[in-house]
Length: 254
Image 1 (cartoon, helix red, strand yellow):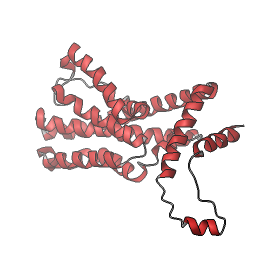
Image 2 (tube, one colour):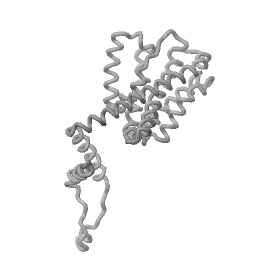
Image 3 (spheres, helix red, strand yellow):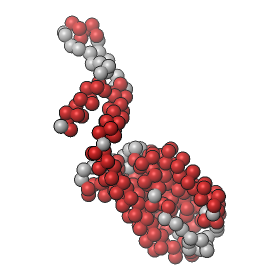
Image 4 (cartoon, helix red, strand yellow):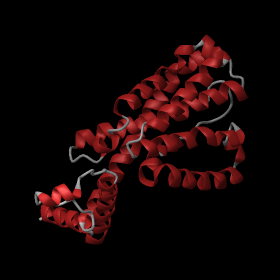
């Protein structure tokens, strides 16, 4: 790590995968469990002490919510990070240091709610694009808050931040690419497993149908029942909608 005698590991490349596979809450819980064990074994590896958990925690949360099509929380995380950075001495002297972080933020605003559709698309190019955006967005959150901690806890001078720009661009680009590869391989492996497992396919269909039923029940239907009865119009019912949707999915599969 430029400006100190510390080393940086490649954990940010796994953060987007944690968020995608386990979601924001379970991904966070698993991450904390793993890293608490690592911290007990080798606390020197965490150069910000317990504060070292903050950047990857926010990284996993960002990936988890983006994987659910929710860009609101990641947007808030980025904006808060920008405020903290620009209020710092480094933010005033080297504001352009977080240029890649700002690019990631713009991507979140533009396609943050479409990432999952891209990742799970049958088009491999779209899958690669979605995976790269998710990985890049998550990795740069980690970088943004790591940079903030470097300012406030290690007092790294602005000259070192300037020198670090080419290094971090190379480092974070590599991490993002590596993270996207992890995602694509995992998604493709899951697709193959689902294809050969009727049991897993049934579970996934039922979960999807359940979410669609919940959405449909949230739609308010304001119909005059007496008027409908007079003209022989049936009022929609939701009693068996889940069974009907499952039939449709199975029919399409055949």
